[in-house]
Amino acid sequence: MDRRSKLIEILSRVAQKEVNPSDDESLFDSGTLDSFALPDLVSALEQEFGISIPDSDMNPRKFETVARISEYLDARQ
Image (tube, rainbow, N blue to C red):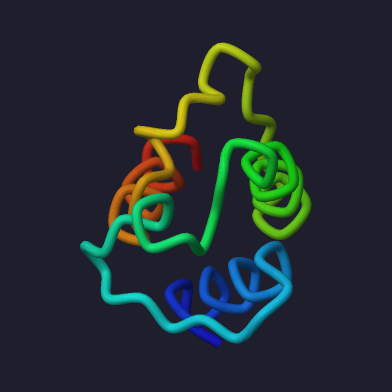
């Protein structure tokens, strides 16, 4: 499974509904995520990709789109 597919799977699990956003679609503006779901997303990303995301990075802008999440993961791995 490629990274984008894994991210969509994680987003669907966190949002508790099937989602398939475009790479540049805002996950917050579309209602896929909200500020309460952000910690769940970060936790799922940490578990799936074996990384540690510091609290200082828990900013919605860093996780705004699938593309931004992927870029963030590139920088952390």
